[in-house]
Amino acid sequence: MSTDKDRFLTIFNQISSSLLADIQSLPGLSDSLKSQLTTYYSTCLPYTVPGGKMTRGLTVIKGVEVLKSRPLTDKEYTDAAILGWQVEWLQAFFLVADDIMDGSITRRGQPCWYQRPNVTQDNAINDALILENMIYQTLRRHFKGHPSYVGILELFIDTTYRTEIGQHIDTNGTPYAEGKRAPLDLGRFTLDRYRGCVRYKTSYYSFYLSCALALAYCGYSQDSEEGKALYGKAEEVCMRLGEYFQIQDDVLDAFAPPEVLGKIGTDIEDAKCSWLVCKALELVNEDQKQILVDHYGKHEEEGVKKVKELYKELKLEELYHEYEEEQKKACDELIASIEPESFRDLFTFLLGKIYKRQK
Image 1 (cartoon, rainbow, N blue to C red):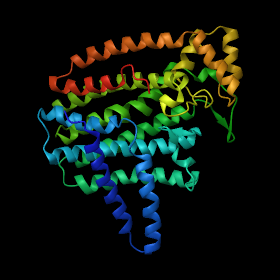
Image 2: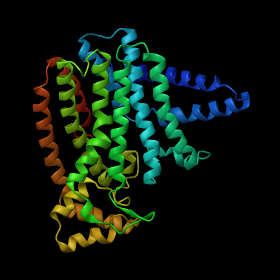
Image 3: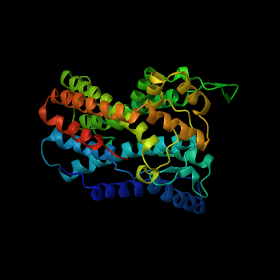
Image 4: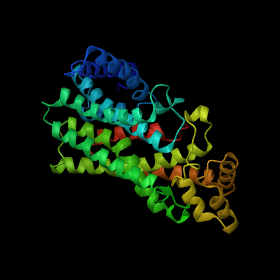
């Protein structure tokens, strides 16, 4: 099965070249302005879009391969890779915006895009919107004549909407009054809120979208009985994988060294509704709860340290490892129920990518 990153990155370069050429063809702009725009985005695109493991994009290729049950032709590979890169573009749009909202410092081992010299926060907000728009430019260029063009567009539209709903749930874990953060309300940190956030913020775009794009490209319609069953099973597995992935992410945010994780975790300072704080609130006594009241959501190094010490005292890492094994077993059983059998390989591939990951 082809998951060659170098070949995949070649397609990124082709897509980027076309998008930069689009800027050059904009009417009514001077050559000087076009040159400035092209120079800026020729830095922005490789900085924000590729990077990391690129699992979301490669999953589309893997999905098309398992559904075709044969090696892909060059045209099929290119199409699948272009779709895969649009998932990576969507990820870039979300991350550029998310880093601004969270006040993050690093991403993938380097400064966040908005932290770069000569970018500024205002520019970065606009850049996030342009990254999103580029998805639709690329889809129109390559798939306008494809039988599944409308279905593919709808998958991106629906996934973006759902992810933004998840982001709202995430960023509104602490209420605001008259434009200012209200006093921390630990009662809002529940596993119910957490699961809703994870389903919408993570599971759909990180797992389901790639699988659904492979189905759409291969001609499976959500209106047919066979298609409904396949999309439904993909969604069921991906929601479970997404929750597992996000809980894993929360644990890594608190405990993984930044040099391994590739970013500095800020969930405690940002008062995130993380799995760790939700579980802690189920287990704490009154004295332990006071530590969270006093220090959660504050940008104080000593306070963050005390919250992490509380997590260790409550043995939350051990609880997570028990959860991880339970999820692995549940995912294996769910994957085994998928028909056709060849489609199972895609979800086994995804589970293998996240099981016991360290970053």
